[in-house]
Amino acid sequence: MNYPIFTKEHQSLMAKYLNIGIFNHLKNLKSKNDFTLEKAINSGLKNPDSGIGIYAGDEESYTLFAALFDKIIEDYHGFKKEDKHISNLNASYLKAPLLKEHNKYILSTRIRVGRNLKNFPLGPAISDIQRKEVEKIVSNALEHLECDLKGKYYALNALNKKEQESLIKDHFLFKEGDRFLQAASLNNDWPNSRGIFHNIEKTFLVWINEEDQLRIISMQEGGDINTVFSRLLKAIHLLEEHMQFSYNEHLGYITSCPTNLGTAMRASVHIKLPKLSMDMKEYKKITDKYFLQIRGIHGEHSKSEGGIYDISNKRRLGVSEVQCVQDMYDGVSALIKKEESL
Ligand code: ADP
Ligand code: IOM
Image 1: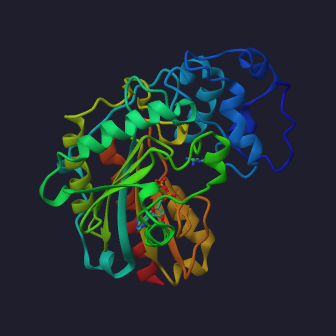
Image 2: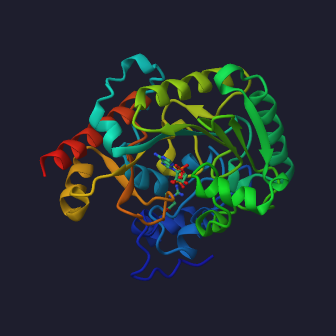
């Protein structure tokens, strides 16, 4: 592979940091799962509008290609290569009282974490057979859940198109054919071994073999962040009894996209602030102050509809899970306070 031709459309952190020196240093390296620099950066090359533009094929990728990953990780998370990740999966540390203003503006709350299984390659380097094994381990583990977490696993190829579309429209299921994941080899052998588990109320869900091998999700209507967080943590602890997740002291939970390392947590609300959204500069000033990210109504790379935005924590590494949710709660409370003052 030759040094890529970046155009001014290539806006990703990968394009920002992959200079010719780093490229020459990394171009011939290969991880034990045959993962290379070429495979890692393909998504960002094919999709110039990528925010990050690089994926890891295994835990080893983060050390083998550290000359590039460390710069991207520091830029995105403000986390240096000598730093250590801290985890706190105890909901009692969260200070997030539910006020009536929260329910007035927040339409729904969702908190998810990504997880991958220890001793398996990550999605961009996994084989069809290994992916099937992951599906089996995770879907068997999910069968042990009881009470409010009890549910059923639906393999993607057992759901018809209409059922899939309805789950996507209602924000429960991942979309099909995402071009960023496609170019990262994350859609290989689609739809084999992909699926969704959910309880009857669809307040607890698990995606299997999407960007990460598990996306563990807790969600419900309204702004009760405490309940959503507690449900998620209960589920994570129970699932950990049945499988071992890929984790190390430096990077925390290992994920295929470097934005998700550490806690792999995205705590979000769908919120409608009619007055404040007339002034997106002011809106963004507040989200930046509280380390928040703005997404559209259908998740990453989508647009807002009807003035509804998806507001979530941006930092995920070097801060605890409690801090991720606290960032979101504090920032959303500040946005609501501003709206009420207008
Ligand atoms: P992820 O959150 O796993 O990184 P996306 O940003 O693509 O992935 O979001 C996945 C789905 O979750 C999308 O349909 C999105 O609209 C939905 N979603 C995210 N936050 C909320 C929320 N607070 N309420 C309802 N749906 C949400
Ligand atoms: N997490 C991932 N889907 N995303 C950050 C991709 C990108 O925009 O580069």
